[in-house]
Length: 252
Image 1: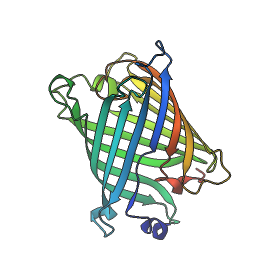
Image 2: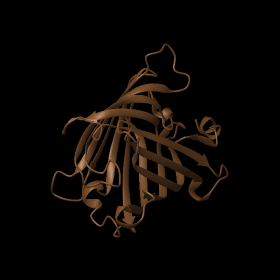
Image 3: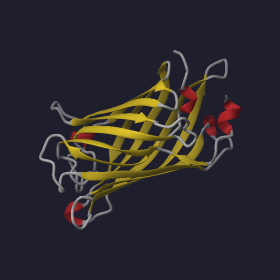
Image 4: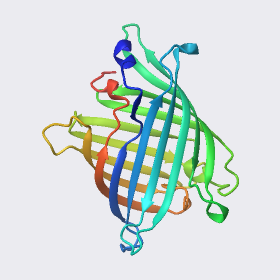
């Protein structure tokens, strides 16, 4: 297993790369409330050599955009930039089987604007990904935020201090379910739930391409209007990440 992982490419997909479009379910549907969302995300491994504690160094970059394609001028409503530098480590059992993947990262996220529309925050994040049931992978992520008081001082009330993501492969390369949950740092119902269904309508799936149905409910889908509650359902095309493919088929 260690030899197989070591042969992975230096450059790869990090998070899902997608283009989806949809409508709100909690307000009137019109050209101003309907939109498109797309994301570009990649990972570049910087070291293969042994670092302390058998870790490796890598960079990631994710850009998420909200595009009002149904309005006359097709304006971009919000663009969020998320560069990261991180240390990763693979954990194995005594039989050389992968138990989990851990990362320690410095992340910056902002919308690249200034003045009253400026939104940004920094965080040190810790993530551990492992198989919890057969064909079910869970990622547990927590962060220590800093540098967020100016422009969005109450951001943690909506994004919290961590998230849980669970992905279940119902049929390999055909049908996958995914759920991510965040809870805001409060005693109110702030936070978000994001549910996705990936379906491959073709006979083969060499390039990891799917149709994706997504439902997002809560706040902070984007940084600009992070306080705004919304419920959006979207559908579109995705090139799904296979960063944790090693866990598929594993039993706990």
